[in-house]
Amino acid sequence: MEESFNNHLGKKLRMRRLSLGLTQTKVADAINVTFQQIQKYEKGTNGVSSARLMQISQFLKVPITYFYEEYKDFTAFSAEKDTAEGLNYSFLTKTFISMSKTEKDKILQVLSNAEDLNKTG
Image (cartoon, rainbow, N blue to C red; front, side, top):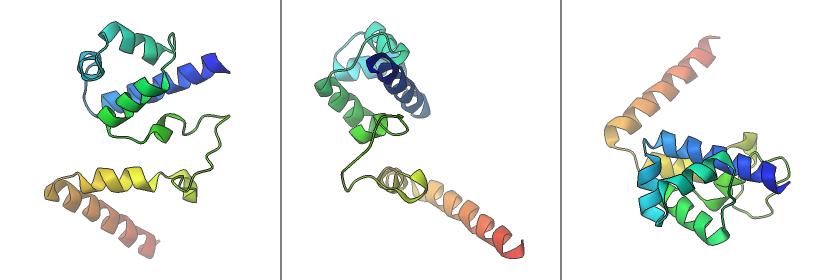
């Protein structure tokens, strides 16, 4: 189980890092490790300690549970887990709040257009 979780966590780390446009070096510098260590985390070669995972989640601006989401053996018992359609609403809310007005307006326009399509069939 540990090896497959390390791979899962590594994929989530890589996906989030790339979505923010960060290099392995930037993440490494932020948490005081080498970029090679980030490579090992992303490949699942090395596990991530709980303290290091907290640093990573804070730097990448995601809750720690982000790294456990969609892992086959993970069941969250906290009130933080949003179950409706598997969406993480707290993450979406934080992301939306951090956007500029222009970015928010674009997203609202897309949602409005999608609603109009649903009404017309």
